Structures are given as structure tokens and as C-alpha cells.
Length: 356
Image (cartoon, rainbow, N blue to C red):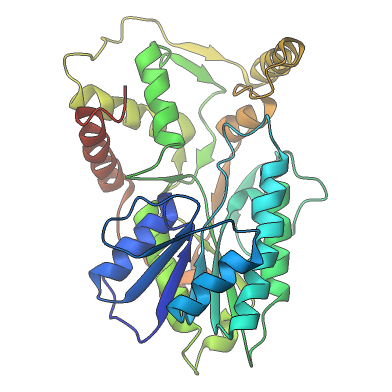
């Protein structure tokens, strides 16, 4: 997976969380000069700049001290767990991205790669083999998606072939080592003994993407922005990046649960419970009721929502032909290998006491 090092100096904004950390790892593995900008610092071997993405002075200071020529912007609040504070999505993804663009232009940065999400084109209806020609929906079903749409539009509008060149990389169904959204959610279900419950008929195909592949694509895009023969096909563009292995949604979840059985054999629970399949329509009814009850109780961070049901019961997968043709992208880590690596990481986290 390691590519040839470049002469760029990289500043990874959001380099302390999932995608950003893998980008940093891959840059270090190939010998590049890389710095991190984030609100927290967990890297022992990379110089980090703590700051607020919405503070122009913090961003300017980091860019001046590093002399960055390429910004990789991966910072974003996770969609699960922030329902109680939807304004955080707009603040970080929209206002923060505007600040990054302004700071990059002021500092003379040549390249800006933005990590985005397939949620920008999802409105609850099926997407089969979707590509970059899909329009933004008139209305997005979640403030996270709304904010990512606006962020993408700002990134694309900022592209200037003679100054700051920009590109957007979209992933779908992200998972892998250091993932604390999909994997922790699957672990909670496994630990609580609810793995026998299935929403929908499981005929809906769903894309899952190993985070290592996304980081790989981001670095490919950065390199192509410098390629005089192809940069015009990259700058100002959006690219879907997935594993190209769509599978029924619950098949993937069961593979994760089987992984937990393997790494925790003493805690593994036999599949004694009869599978419970809740029809899609009923799952939506239950989700609306659950959301209403949570609202009455003042719990603004409900997890079982209609939006979650939509993702679990709707066919959503994408075509990466554009990324393959233009960027030279090919998945480096299969879903099966990604699950194996994720479980090895999770076991290490558990043994070290960082997971209960």
C-alpha cells in the first residue's frame, strides 16, 4: 500500500481520529514530512498543533510553522452520538471548512484534499451502483449529511487551477482499526445479546470500506493534483472510494459479531435465541416511537432513529470507476482482511483497558 514519498509537506487536519490517523500512518511509512492539527493530541511521533478549526489564528499559526504545501482535511464530528447537538456538524463541517479554505489561500497552500461521505447523496431511497453524477438531494435526512453537502460545495467552489487545487474523496460504510463508531456499535450489540434481531429482509446490498483504502485514495488524489497530464481531471472533482464488495447489510454485521466470538471465546454466547426479523415498515414505526419517547424524556441523543433504520434496510452501494480510471485507485485491503485487522486492534484495546 505504501506509495513513493513526495516533496510535499502535509498538514492533516483531524489527524487524531480515524481517517486522519491512517493518513498520517501511511505518510510516515513512506517517509513524508507530516504534521497534525487537531483539538487533541495522541501522536507520540508526529508534531501536533492543538487548535480550533474555526479559529483563523490557530490555523494560520500551524500553516506558517509547518510550511505545509498540502492540507488533508479529515476533521468531522461522528454522526452517531451527536444528535443532541446538531449545531456541531455545521460548526465543524461548514464553518470550519470555510476557515480551512481561507487559511490555505492566505498561506499559499497548493493542494487541499477533503474527506467526505456518501451520506451527501443519500435521502433514504435506494442507490444501486451510484456514481459521481448523482445530484445532492433536495433534503437530507440528517444534519450531518446536510453539513457535509455544504462543505463539499465550498471545497469544490474553492478550486483554482492556478492557486489552490481541491478535491473531494467520498467513502461509504467506513470501518477499520481505530474506528469507534461502526465497530463500537457492533460490540455493544454483541455484548448486550441482541445480535439475533434483524431489521428488514437483509436483501439490501451495502458498501463497506476499509479505512486503509480511503487513506490510500486520499494520497493518490494528492499526488494526481500535481500531475500535469491529469490534474485537470482531479482538481475540483469528487470521487467515490469503496471496497467494491457490496454485501447484504446484516451479513457484514454478523461477520463482525463472529469476529468478537473469535477474539473473546470465553465470552462468546451460543446462538440459542431464535432469529427475530422485524419487517422494514415495522422497524420505521418502532424507530419513530422510540424517537418520540426519547424526546419526551429529554434524551436528544437517541440512537434507534428512522435515519438509522434507513441505512440498515436500504440498498446503498457505489461505483468507483472514476477513481480507478483517474486516480489509479484499487482497494488494498479486502473486507475480510479489514475485519481481521480490526478485531486484532480491538482485542489490543480491550486488553489494555481502553474498552470495557
